[in-house]
Length: 68
Image (tube, rainbow, N blue to C red; front, side):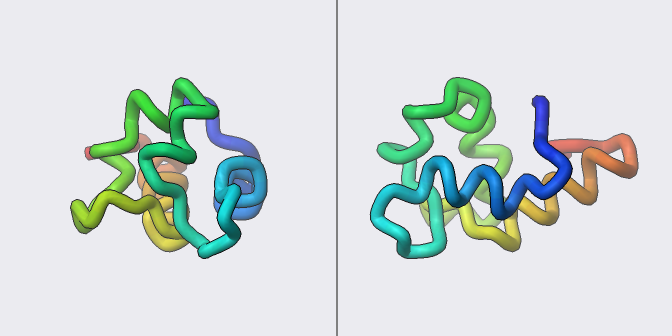
């Protein structure tokens, strides 16, 4: 999964169309990579991807265990 250097801001700005600070599955459709990984990024399983969840995935990726 290709994540920009500041993924939380970049991804949220690009996909969060209703500006609620989270990415819904409907919003994720605009990015095939995020959509494909949605359930793994949505750590708490609430159907939304938060900035915190994006940060967690980015940190895991930088430590070699992304989306685990």
